Length: 354
Image 1 (cartoon, rainbow, N blue to C red):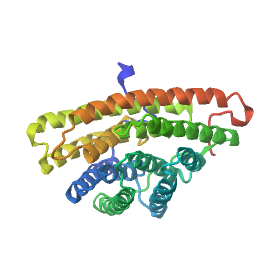
Image 2: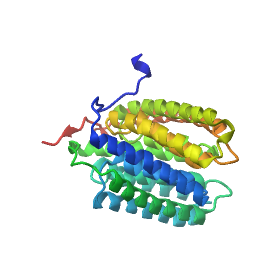
Image 3: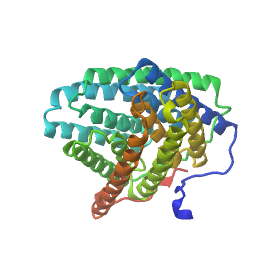
Image 4: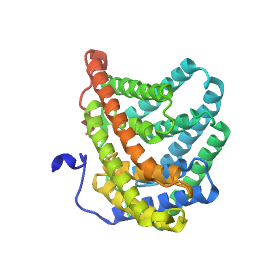
């Protein structure tokens, strides 16, 4: 039935050499990041697996502009966590205002277009670090160090993947969309309000074990408007459901051997290859395939260890994420209605330039 399929935007049926190479980059890059995290005993393995997913999955080509935005995102987030959390971590109101201001700047960068990658990666990265920093036992210095280590690892892995599986040629550029000032204002206010509300909710309710749910409330905001958030939320739920079930299948196949790293790596590679293909057939956007990729990255990178399997984390992840996505979409809809009541913040459909 159509209702159980992902809502695709820009989906396609043909699968060419460029798509295959990107699938291989995503699968091998994510698996290498996972292996680096486990072999080094990193406390925050999610960074090592999620970063390659974002960099290899969101942009098919590597160039100076992409690397510059990636490094800028790492520098900004590290500075915010070190200084902001260090100075304001025990002061809820100033910390919330700082987070709101940062979200506004990042969503503004996304709404303008050229720095979308910087804004998107910074929002996701900041959400993860702020989530971990809320733990009573959080080691902020160790967290930032792990973040920097994951960034260095991701850059090396990305360069290696593009060397082994190069892009065969230039891909058609995505159409540049023209937005009115009112539309950009609408998008920034809407996304900032909902993301800040999510931050407050997870802090007040002390939901320390819900990393994936908090990240999901940010990812559904990537379209920056109500019309795009609905399919993004649905795709997120579908992708997470599929990813969690594949994680459980891998767990069942391995049974008591989930602590054997080579077996886990093979299972992860196969699932990433499958979801990378799904991601590219959906057009390479933030669809169900990308949701499944990040699901596997967080499950395997953060929660799987020789002494802990995936069963509880898997089931809890999907249930908490479903609730979080529904509430986030409700907040997006209410903000959309409120902002559209005023001419200065009324949203209009962007039009292609030229």
